[in-house]
Amino acid sequence: MPFEPPPSTWSLTEVTATWRASTPPTTSSRWGRPDAGTLLQAYRCGLFPMPSGEPGDPPMWFLPVRRGVLPLDHLKVSRSLRRSARTMEIRVNTAFSEVVAACGDPRRPHAWIDADIVDAYTELHEMGWAHSVEAWRDGELVGGLYGVAINGLFAGESMFHRATDASKVALMGLVDLMRDRYADTRLLDVQWSTDHLASLGVVEVSRETYAVRLAAALRLPLPAAFDDGEPSGPTLRLVVS
Image (tube, rainbow, N blue to C red; front, side, top):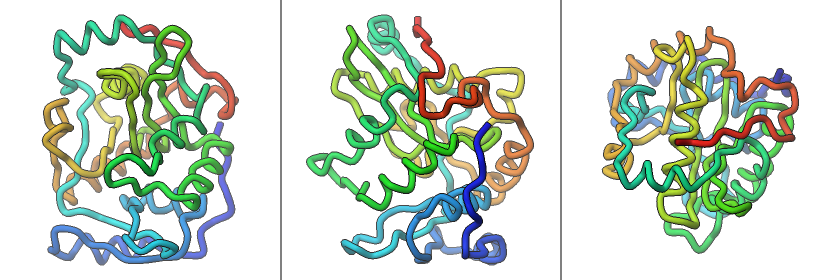
């Protein structure tokens, strides 16, 4: 089971209640560094961090009016993606640091993952909250994603690929890991919808709908793959067919 970090020094519940009553397309603010306790409280309130754009500044915390989520029964898998999936193996938490480093490669367009983000999510991983879902081919890590699992919520943060479709295969693996008897209530949050994500089945929901779905998801148990008691070691190997 994950264990709780020291609580955040920020009280985000009242802030998010006020923001939910506002109408701007995106509401954001700055609150200090993204320590583990603040991150967990933020996700439980519906917030997520992103860079402010100023090197060395604390991140911005966002609560969008329109939120991107992937219903577990909406994932769109093309024939070519299925072919790619047959050549790869899905693993969980066997290369968390490498996945985060690949997602944060400064050569990537719009790279935003800095040392503070790496440290905060690595701490969450060591506590059992942050997880990597990895696509491997012939013993080589070729793609993956990472995010935070809190009860029935998986908040996806970033993904990368070194081989065609590898990040999509990792997403397929994540969806499979979340499909259990609670699948209809689990919440896979991708923060924003883009044309690329929409092509995979991501939809937008209102801030109000997200809050209702989040509350329901937080009452669920963790998916088995993220609740093995060994957050820093291998948890599951799943061949996607």
